[in-house]
Amino acid sequence: MTESTRAQLPVLLKGLHDLLANELGVARSVVAHSGTKGEVSEGRWIEMLRHHLPTRYQVSKAFIIDSTNTCSDQIDVVIHDRQYSPFVLKFDSALYVPAESVYAVFEVKQEMSADEVAYAATKIASVRRLHRTSIPIPHAGGTYPAKPPQHITGGLLCLQSGWTPPFGDAFQKAIAAAPPEGRLEIGCAAQHGVFEIAYPTNEPPCVSVHASTGPLADFLLRLIARLQCMATVPCLDVMAYARWLDQEQAR
Image (cartoon, rainbow, N blue to C red; front, top):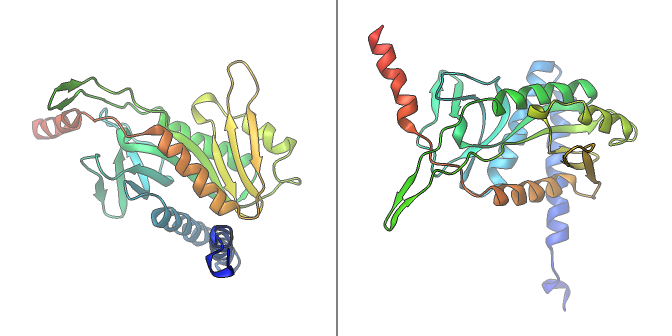
């Protein structure tokens, strides 16, 4: 094998990590105001995911709303359906995504800490508590039964971990403290590594840490693998949302 035909994938993935880590670091060091800094970081993560996830997925900062007129907290990064979800609502700069179309939600912070893990868990729980509809799907040979709503993946995205070591006992204690509805399953500290968490029944959380030389590229690949396992969102009941038009007219 000649040098020109040698596989370049390791170099490309490492280069991708270096580029994105540099951009995230610049957002932290140059932008002084904390609110602006947070918005810049959120935008960087969103653009990274938009560029690299398959086109069937949309990535947005959004509120999640359900057909009972209940709304989540605003979520920094929402991965939602682009192909089959019939609507996304926008009011001024606020985006509203139907609960049925959501695959994953992430909180974005500069530094990972116990407080930030707890805050992310609260945000994730506000989405998972929402009501989601699912209706049968007609096809040429009959009708597919209604698909049960899939589990919504939750996670935390940071520039770095505030702990030493980054994913040691303090991190695992913070993860274990999250309530069931707010459990985190995947996340990234761009300077330190990727974490994935499984929750065996009646056992402590099982934390896997992947401290590769390119955490951001590693995170993208692991996230894509999770999304592949989720397949497609269910067919939502559009008329469950439309009934609120009748109620508005009746006022």
